[in-house]
Length: 205
Length: 376
Image 1 (spheres, each protein chain N blue to C red):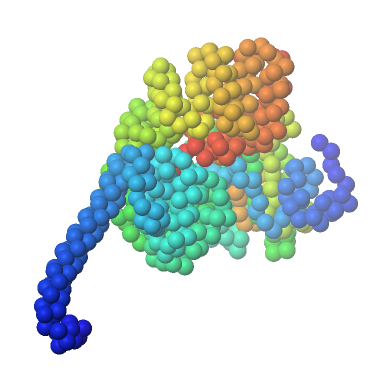
Image 2 (image 1 turned 60 degrees about the vertical axis):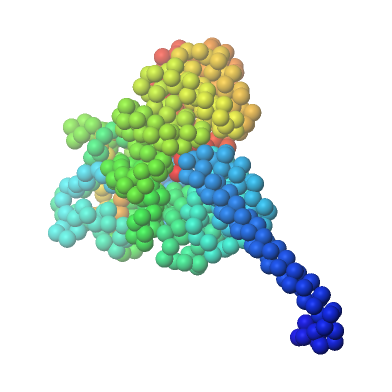
């Protein structure tokens, strides 16, 4: 994985969409729209969410309230952790978080690590990303380069804020969404139908 | 006036005329009576035809109902109500293109009719007609924003865009407006099911059945939930209930077959798939499912034959080529396997399948056991 030069990053960020949609290598800047492919869906609604620390009133609920005005603020030593524990093993493909350097300045994360595992005891880092003065939705793909690694299969995800901009101590994150592939509309079928002829007949409504 | 005049000019004539006139009058009343009688007869006959059609429709004998409706004279056939009934009959027979044709005509003839428009919106949903569906939804809202049908149409619009949360809100609005509409409950159930909230989904399907026990869509919905939860006996029971209500639906037959296959009753399952294939030659679902069962029984050549027949009705189906690729791999015809996987990839499968097919393609030259662990 090669780091792109800053100049190229700036150019990529100028065209909307590319910055957020680009693979996790390089420095992410965020984009104003939350754009996710139609074959994925948010899947952390029923998961158990927790954080390593928080300021009273800016707790874990602020990460999931669908509001960009509220935020989670950590209150402790780095790294600041967000833990997401699922009820069963799930397939995940994408993490999207909303951060705003214009509003949060030194509270804005600059380095984030994503870890996965069965529980707290065996988390393994799967991705590290650098953020550069991000404003908006930052898309972090969990896929590897091999097609077999398009998804991660896991019980638990941990998002760790390793550093903030301007050496800030505590962090602000305004939203976190986690996406995985939609289940096949036809139960127990190995592949999804793609043509209208088949989709039309595949369910009753 | 006229008779008076005649009476004044000639009495003899007047008598004759008078007599003639009396006769005429009597004849006229007689003919009027008989006209009235034939009128009443015709009207009753018409109502009888309509009633018979509706009765058969309610029994889900849709083919017979269509034959009856076709006996109606043209001016009667081309009315909003009849066209809607015809559209609904085609809908139950899973012929969405024909259903669309008649519903569209009905909606054009009487744009303010709301009854049946919820079904019309579902037809457009199945046909993936996003623009026409959203136009219909807006029209219905402008006709009556307090009607459940209009909100069902709006909900279907969002469901087609896979925005299931918004769709659910709209269907709940429909339920709120009239809780006696079973279909609105069922649509809520479908959306909860899409959101993988099976507890609520079951709740709404049950509400629908409380309103109308013969609403087979809700029985089907319950079957799908149980199939997903791997409660296969329950699934079979609910699909069978649905199938008993609407025995002509090839899709219901197919789902019943799928439940039987899950219960490892492969012979019954195959029989059911055959039945589905026979009853609707345009439906690709049972052909695909039959091929899957045959693959499970290691009858690879038969599975390929079935997929060839599937290709005739759905030539651009990625999942079909993916399955063919897997079969050729099993038969050790590797060049064909690679070719089929390649075609499957070209037909833009979703990311989940893309990953599986790509890795299957890469591993085509490796021994079999590495293939299976990628299956969903």
